[in-house]
Image (cartoon, rainbow, N blue to C red; front, side):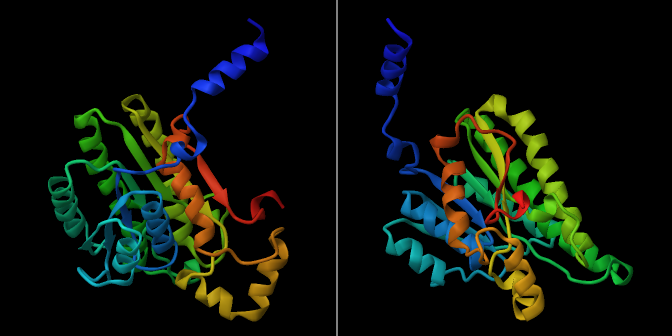
Length: 271
């Protein structure tokens, strides 16, 4: 048998490409799903077949826009209103989450917040709030979900939302940069521990995406223009630009992808 024949045989045995991206029968937890990137990710996962469990501080327990969107594509939606800046609230809801949903297959740790101040003016309360939302709550949720996955011996997918500032320093966003740099390290650390259990831990690093978190930059005409001029794609990103990467990292297509921080930035980092 020639090498060419062997390759053809291997490919014939592989599932169709679309099947690798199917999330039929999966339950996906998405934090920060009420707007922006989280909304787009939850919608995309639902379109791929997943039922969605939404977690957000301002999420209505019923009748939200994301619930209507998910149910509009034929998937179920369950909402949890959680203050991710409160460790006690996160712990309580993390326990409730795994009790109420004994088969969680996907966790998208997307929720985040930002504080824009010169470092010299930063106050401890704001520092603590940003790190609690962007890092500590994410770890506690990942820990609870991974514990369930390991007990079930089923494996699963955990995806964090990192940032360009996982690679760069930024200006006037010291707490955000610290938290997102830590998310990149946490992604690699958890991947090292949990890959043996069939749990893929990865992260997406969005570039400059037009969301509420970047509204101040968008409103600054000079700053916004300088950003776009640096991006090879020539535009701000949209939340939907992140959705495809999330489906990939949540699906069987990424079964051999571990500890990656995937930039989706229009080419910013390559410039």
